[in-house]
Length: 177
Image (cartoon, rainbow, N blue to C red; front, side):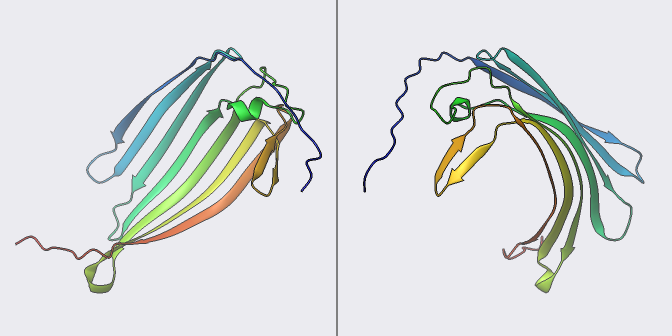
């Protein structure tokens, strides 16, 4: 095997990152309605690009007064991902210290259904549909196991999909005596 291209670089960076969040769960409705709101906000500060980010998010859950154990959910939020060192590196190994956080605005709707199955064991089916709008995306190339980032916020994207899970508990249930 012959080496055909070499890139050498050095970097001396000092980066301070500060982050935190606050969140609260609020029960809404009366005894006939089981509605809860989970709301919060996260903040990030990155000294390298002097970016201060605020990311609010909320989820509304409703458990209808049915005979079935069902929870309906609707969530929305803004999510910001400050860049990591590898995302600052361009293809030519130079650093772009002005790269901003990748940003996502998203909406998720879902349902959880819990029930007793074989031999009274608990089961749960969870399904969600989502839409995410992304901006300030840092494109990347994947070559086998090597990931190379463009080092620039020069892309927009979106993601949409449906996810479903089936969870089963195979632990033996103990009855209280």
